[in-house]
Amino acid sequence: MTGHVYFVGAGPGAPGLLTRDAHRAIQTAHVLLVDALVSPAVLNDIRWDATVVDVGKRGGQSGPAQEQITERLIHEARAGRKVVRLKGGDPTTFGRLSEEIEGLQKYGIPWSVVPGITAACAAAAAAGFSLTDRDLSASLTLLTGHRRVGGPNPELDWQAASRSGTVAVYMGVLQAHDNVDKLLQAGVPPETPVLIVRRASWNDEQMWQTRLADLPDAIDRYSIRPPAVWIVGDVTTNARIGVRRPNNGNVVLLRPAGQDNGWKDRLEQTGRQVLWFPLQRTIPAPDIGRRLSELAENPGDYAIFTSPNAVRYWLDAHTSAGHDVRSWSGVRIASTGEATTAALAAAGIRCDLTSHSSGGAGELATILANNQPAVATIFQAADGQSEGFTKLATAGWQLTYCRTHKKELRGDGRLLQLAASRNWINAIIWTSSSQVEGVTRLAPEMLRGQWIHIAIGDPTAQALVSAGVPEPVKATHPDLESVVNVLDQN
Ligand code: SAH
Image 1 (cartoon, rainbow, N blue to C red):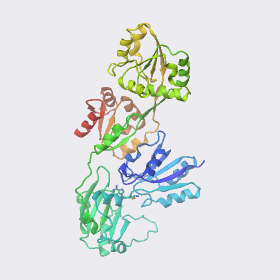
Image 2: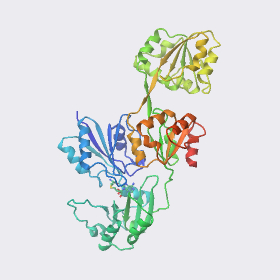
Image 3: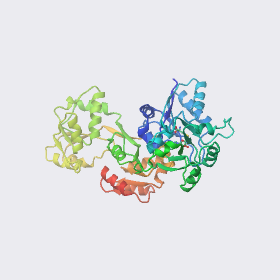
Image 4: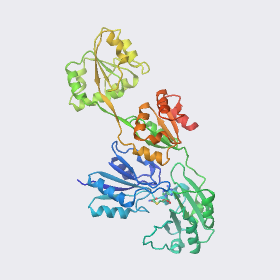
């Protein structure tokens, strides 16, 4: 079966400026070919097994040639995959869309285009003015300041472009000198106002206002580098460049999948752009169904739950095996912490005994050991500890362990490599030492950049130091507010 190629506009940068169709395509793609101007923050929520291919040109180095990109699209689609070709802004605007579509057409590969917000619109939105205006400008020209070397290259008619209205120049930072000369020669008055917007909608968005004749100087003086659009026309006198979005930087979050969204949402509310890239997820233990059937025959006296996940996977396993929890009706239920008790309560199961989360298994075992020795099943993760329950075994209890779920590591860390190599990261939040192991294997460049490493807990901080991060910053408490405090102070 042939796959499908989606040419998707990633918008100017901020993830909120993706269309819903774009987001859906990103979430479901097997393979994503990502251009240089795409922000890693729009790549939240990619599939667990998605492959991310960085086809951007950066730092003067060229990316893969156009033919190679088209070949890759064809190859992936012919293998039946859903492919997203992610382009900055809008794919139909200075994005070589037709060349790539032509390549697919030759092989009969189905494709669709999802539009995006183009840079000129994002720039105007950032500065709060209208690109057209019934008194000042009746047209908008999108123009490239950079021409292809050696192509048929129709000469740009600068005069026509500038005659009636606003001109937005893309890819015109490095060519500004030459572009401005042409506009002046075409008769555009030297005092025509110009607005320059760099990285519209990113956290480090910047804007400047100048006059056409002074534009090249302004670019030198303020060391303005691409990507920026400059907009020429009287409409830009209405630009309000004093209004800035909060520049609180970009954060990579590595918390496991399945944990609540609160962290990402809260970090976004503090004006940060977030890439949440879980390195681990939990999956059901392979033989949980068989084990439950065995236990249903002989459920013993106690069922002990050691985490909310143990409860969740235990419940799910009943459902998928066609059982329900009635086989446990005569059994006493115990839990090693409040969150676990709450997970049981949410399923309509009241706990007979709960220890405090801080005391955990050890505390529960001490309470239970006051009773007559009994038969207990302990539901826990595949890598769960048994030490806490030693006291029960010593007291003559008969303990059986049932592994409900296990951790699985992600296979592809190329999205992290992309974020690191584009220097997009300001801070990384590490919540466990296993994340350090995962990153060492999948994207070691994350351990080397000039960003802040925030560690939750001593073992995490130690793992970072062993991995070569000289000074991780420790959060005082293992919670989000402490992390936000550390971010605010650094
Ligand atoms: N398809 C893109 C344009 C690609 S050409 C779009 O529709 O926006 C690349 C040029 O786009 C850059 O050189 C710059 O001029 C402009 N550009 C892209 N993203 C931008 C942004 N966030 N802020 C300012 N200019 C941007």
